[in-house]
Image (cartoon, rainbow over all chains, first blue to last red; front, side, top):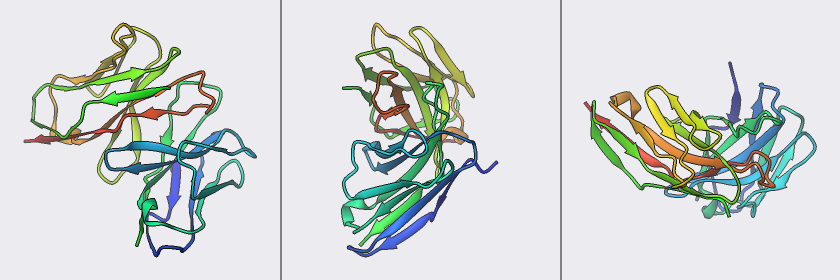
Length: 114
Length: 115
C-alpha cells in the first residue's frame, strides 16, 4: 500500500536555485494538497487541487507554483529558492465528495535553503 | 475566520499517566473536528474525528468529545505508553470553506512519554 509518495525526502539548495517536489497518490483521490510545516506554526496550506485540471492558492502561495499533471500527480515548484522556504513539505490527498476532511499524507520532504 | 488553538507543549509524562491535550476552535459554521498524530520521521495520520456536536471520536485508547457549547475538542487518554510519544495536531474542516476539504491545523503538541 503505497498511499501518498513524495520525492525527494531530503534536499539542500542554495539561494536562487530551483527545484520541484514530486507527489503521487495511488488511491484514486480527486483532491490533492501541498502543506508546509514549520516549528511552532502547525501546517499551512500552500496550494491545492480540488480535481484534475484545477489548482488554487492556499494561505502561503508566494514563491511557489504547482502542476496537477494528472489525477495521480501533483508537483510543487520553487523557481528561486529563498532561506525562508526552508521547511518540511507535505503532500496530501483526499477523496472528494465525502466532507469528512480526512487527508492522507505523504512522509514529507525536508528542504534546506542555504 | 476559522482557526484552531491547542495547548502548547511539550508535554512530558510517565508511562500510565493520564493525558489531556486541550483544543478549542473558532468557526462560523458547523465544522468537523479531527486529531492527527505525527510519529517521528513520518507524515500525519488521522487519529480520530467527530463530525457533529456531542459526538465522541475514539481510537487506540484516545478519546475526544465535540463540545459545541465550549467550542472544544480535548484529546484524552487514560494511560499513555512510550509508543504514544509523537506530535498531536487538532484540526477542523469547515464544510462551507471555499477550499474544498481544507483542514485548519493547530500548532501541534509534542508528547514525550518516559518509561
